[in-house]
Amino acid sequence: MKRIAILICLLGLLLSACGQAAPAEQPTTLRLAVIPVIDTLPMFVAQAEGLYQKHGVTVEFIPVASAPERDQLLQAGQADGTLNELLSVMFFNKEKVQLQAVRYGHMASPGQGHFFILASGQSGINDVNGLKGVEIGISQGTIIEYVTDRLLAAQGLTTTEIKTLAVPKIPDRMALLASGELKAAVMPDPLGALATQQGAKIILDDTSNPLLGASVISFRKEVLDQHPAAIQAFLAAIEEAVTLINTNPAQYSSLLAEKKIVPPPLAGSYITPKFPTRGLPSEAEWADVLTWAKEKGLLSADLAYKDSVNPAFLP
Image 1 (tube, one colour):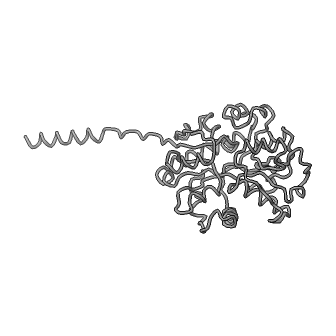
Image 2: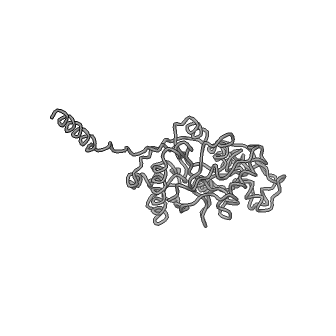
Image 3: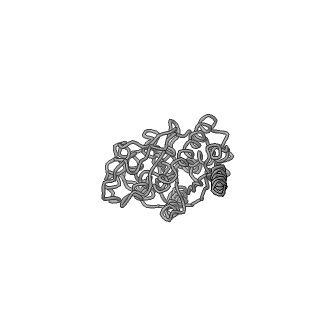
């Protein structure tokens, strides 16, 4: 009898343990370092429309003022992902794979440029030929310099005819262009529109080759390996947000102002661009950026496309 009682007791304990529900898995929180640029609009729309919650992922935004600040947070593991460019991914991965691009962020579309080569209103420059030998204000070693070189070369300017001047801070570039101290400069959208409002003239933009200035959404490889479902959920939410923006771009004008993506002088007049649907840069795009970076002395080693661009998470 005693043995039976013990067996019954053990059986009861077993059934009790089996009957207890496993603790619910907490939603993964993805921390995104974001610069206030137009490329980030789908991220904020997904938040405003409750799309992250719908797909079961929590997203926290960490506002940053510059690319160096963004990169420091990623290096320190204080941010999981960000919006950047292939060149930035290459810099992260020059010694070991730390970052992978998982989706396009933004790029030019027909009639809507992403990067603009502008001439000051006082410069007298009216076309591309007027830029020959003229110092163009840029941020060196960045996507802006890459786009500038490639756009001007496509228009027939030689390496010796393309002159650039390092003016890394955009507010300084804007002020020098407006005053005429800088005859030409390159600006991203929407600051290109603000510069024209201040009297600058658009000489060239990247609508002729939208892939040149494309941004990407990237995550640390460690995060991709540990939380693949969260990354897939995040990108599914972004895809829905892009559809909402492209269907009715004007409905998010107030959000652009709220997130300080569009400068106050453009409020009410800025036309929200359309965003690319699911996709990633091709191997040819990667190879061209890498070739340019090596020619500039920014990188020395070959970096494999497959190590830095990961299509596995696209919805």
